Image 1: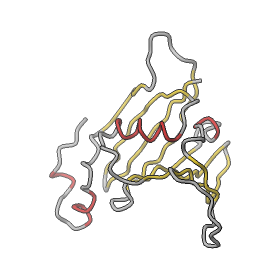
Image 2: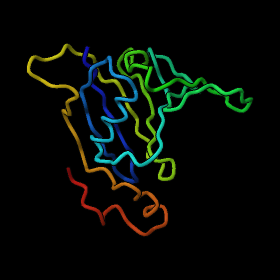
Image 3: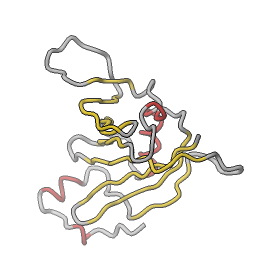
Image 4: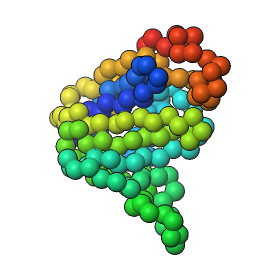
Length: 160
């Protein structure tokens, strides 16, 4: 099945989003790389995924990360899974299931990824496939400029 996902990055007074269609068999590792392309970033920073809703039910403390080696650490209170092993179909079960993708822990770009629908693959369409987008994403390493007041959103032409 093909999964249509809406990925929304909320910035100050506007939202940057992409609607993409991907094969449900891809891993979260694959999805990370697709998102890097969709938002025109260069994969310079750390990232993770946090599941907030799966199979129509809210969940807490579920992380899908690049390095999920279990450690005997009393302070780690969440369930952690390996992004190279977890398929998106394992977590996106029904419409409105949601995962938060955080990229660049310094700039803290948080993307809400929501399953819109599952569809059959269309003949002649190559996946992943971007079906809609609004606004350009902020440049890599630019989050601090907004926080420090060195840049205003209107200073940047981000029309898609």
